Length: 476
Image 1 (tube, helix red, strand yellow):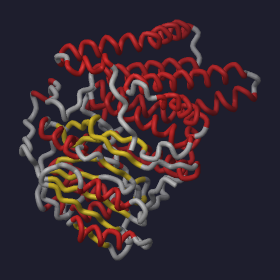
Image 2 (cartoon, rainbow, N blue to C red):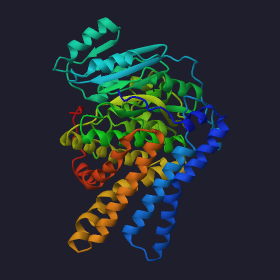
Image 3 (cartoon, one colour):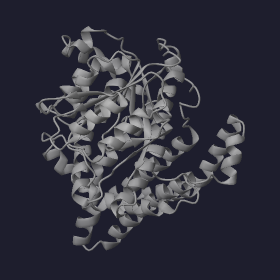
Image 4 (cartoon, helix red, strand yellow):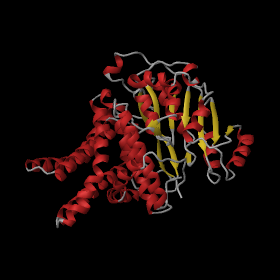
């Protein structure tokens, strides 16, 4: 696992300071760090007097980047460390039921053909220093020796193992394991992950201290970061996606994706909607991917979609056993809950993973996109701004990397690539500020280039093949 980088003297002093002082200093430092980008934004905005689509796109992306950094570093609070203030609209609404001081927890994992890595994952689950913990592993008809490893671990560690006689797919396997769960909290992880001993406890503590939180995500990095150039750039990208992007969304209690490496839910916030997740359909066909975004959407949007979803599965034991009220849950992110995952080390597995993620993005857009505007201006701006950026990325790549050179406008291509590198450097600087002395921040600009030159083109392909889906993991 990556070793922790010693904090700077300034960071150590801030940790000892009064919380209000830390908050003020953090806001001031954030403003100072963002000042160059703000000046660049002002200059670009002035040039909009002669508007062009590429310039407008650049201004919007730059403004969005500044806003996300500002929210992540000025407004985010780790919910495991303190109770977060409720927004005014939540204070006037129905009260959220409090969890017990030490809630019971079921930790669920679905696995298929992971004989080489499953033992490390399961041992890290069992080693979680979380009271009242039950670990359930579902073997979705593995054929590579995974079942034998799980049987050995069952005898040694006392875990519950469910062996399926036929392959059901990850979502169905997880939902089957949850059918008899009666604990206060349900947590999920992925079979290629290893958790810090206190990661699950910190997530559970966040739910206890903040009854309005229906779900929280942990913080994930690459376990095999040193394996290749691809894993190095993904590692720095993961850091930013969690520490910055999720932190910005969490400042509004509207994290749009409780990610699979460590996803922790209150049972009363998610249990009634598990059959809807397992039997989800999109464009007239079953949607087979176990998309974390969709399950998160059921928590975020149940105030508006909950009754419809439950009525659609009214005969399911997940609904008939106990019908929980629809509540305006918030969804958070726990920066201190660390988990590591194996990321793809070669190009082909990485591209397959990215296609799966883009399919999940497209499917979730039609669900969460239908209600996110109801959650307030801030959450809506972050969600729909990200949607517009993802949807526009292929078109912008085509204009700048193909159309412009073919028409002799090489300068437009150069400006586009410089803009991509500038954004990557901003994310790299954020990494360096969070990890003083860690030189891995240098890989982050490469991830931005890789995204613009390669990954942006995958969205049209994902749309054309969105109805295809398989149970697959692995980072080889």
